[in-house]
Picture 1 (cartoon, each protein chain N blue to C red):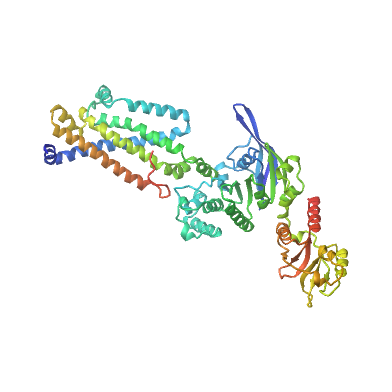
Picture 2: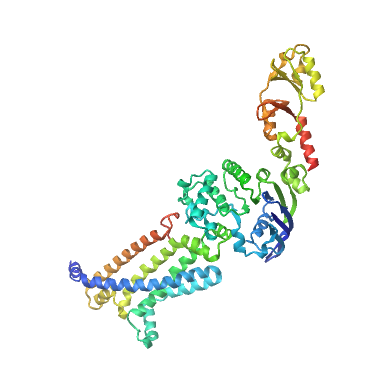
Length: 220
Length: 373
């Protein structure tokens, strides 16, 4: 009851924190899409390159976020961004690489070879095949990777409150340091709800972007 | 016109070079269908793919209308050659119209013109454009998908068509229908077609020329009739099977074999008269004509031989079947078997009897064609 009252009394602050939270994730994941999708497409040309890149991206995701934030403090301090949103955004970009690269790569590699052959045989260039056939067919799986990245990084951003990035993690951090369960629970529930909302929104976008000719609901 | 000149492909494999196609040469006149036939791994598909440079030849040359294909950019070359594959390969993210218009769109055709062309082609295969243009491939049956696959290759009106076992994945009934449909289209369009198949019956039905491959070499290049009459090697003879003469029957039209001229008798003529006429004409039966001179029954040798006296009318049997001159020998033989007729009257378009087919005549006709082939 206390928690509900607290949440109700602080709705405006929660909304502001949530906006902060979602902005960090949105900016970072958008940048990650711009890097990871082309990388995922490029590595379809070479199995060895794909192995190396996917291995590196997998290693990246095993680094705990707290350790990553700690590492970035000395690296980014010279430019005055040792703490705050910049390291948070960078961390999310790095964490987003694996799900997006892997899904893009898998989706393109899995395009039916008969479609590739038909495309080549009819005189499509590699770029035309990519744009007209391979990417449209890969969209559901690429979007699934983006959803994974977004949801996962909403969690990571919560921890970024410790390096002063703001967001809903602030409630959790204060709840812990002040032994205040109201703030802790408010923060945790808000992060979960945000993750669910973002996932639903992206699912809607995925449906919009997928050709009607493809079976609905393809998941990685 | 397509000419292959000592076309060769050697694949480098970890276990050494493998000659997939070995100095294959042939010339296919414009407007004809050439079926590349042979067991799997014989080099027929590799040969076809070298024509649109999906595989680059190791040696030799492909000429299309006298032009060396190496002189043409491969992407431009492929846009000028229709291509149909067994797996169909319709793009699931594109509608039927978009699929058909892939090559016209690549060539930068006006959208109105290309969509009109798509509608025209759908009509050609009896698919209502208003219904099908905006459907997606997954909403079509297998046979409809295959038809769209074929008309997609025709969209930009290329003079040359490459078809890689195009009807291989369809059930036998639909396959017959789509083969017939393709032959009807071909009669009007006169494309130069290279058609890969491993099915002898399909080859005999579709081909103007058959190229038989074995282990990368071209064993024989001939019309289906020549091939079935005179297989060049023991391998081909085995490949064609012991029933190759039966397969030839569908290639020969009745008008192309010598017809017997059976004598005619009246119902009240003595049977002896029928026997005399059979001997004189060399036919195993005579026709019985009515008062107006119209044939309405026949007397066969076996029936006439079984009775001593009496008239032709006593041992006449009805004419159970006739066949038009335009039909093929396979239908004729089927009728003769089914009705136990030693002699099958052949009629022209007006239904007048122009002669009669006999077993001896069929055999003479087939061997005469075989000798001239």
